[in-house]
Amino acid sequence: MRILITNDDGINAPGLVALSRIAQEIAGDQGEIWTIAPANEQSGVGHCISYIRPMMLHKLGNRTYSVDGFPADCVLAGLHHVMVKNPPDLILSGVNRGNNAAENTLYSGTIGAAMEGALQGVTSIAMSQYLGLGNAHLSDPFEPAIAYGAEAVQAILTAHPDEPDVDYPLFYNVNFPPVPANKVKGIIAAPQGRRKNVVFGVEPQKSPSGRTYLWIAGGPQTKKSAAGSDAAENLNGYITITPMRANLTDPAALNAISDALT
Image: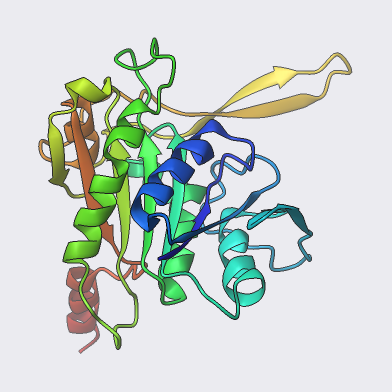
């Protein structure tokens, strides 16, 4: 198997090392692991691409590249340049430092890379490691992802449907809980949740010259979400797998508007 790995934390992120271990376990001794990741951290960029400027590609080693761009750019660089003659069988994005459950999904560059891979017709999986009191003390907080990542991917590959004519193919969002590997309760399928009243905001600061700067500030990651949803089950100690599509249409609202127009 030929696997392309990427992330949004940057080419030097420890989560990318964890992902490489997961990918190697899946690919086996005869497989190929190709790494194309942003040169610098790109957290929170979502599905952004370098549409109005070129991106510089750096070859760092055998099958290893960095891109002065976004995670989705890395996927495009891999599929249409670096690996154009031998495209990957699978794209893995992560392992993100921090969860991409609930509303975080909408901002995540980790998710953006997987979404782009799916739109390009390649099975794609985003993987993120929840951080919290249960794993903050570990020498490697990515321990749960390393221990169970390959198992989660294999489960997805087993269940992934063959849907050659679908407009918006499936991609997958995997979140590992904030606990040591020996405290993981299992792997379950869960829908995307919503932490009630958790939104991004800004924190203003004054510079010595009197100018105002705004820092983006997130909400508490332990706030309750609906029982059975991804964030809730992660905090309960479970690894969650959430199948997703890029189609943002709401069918019920579409029907309501259609009825109102007749």
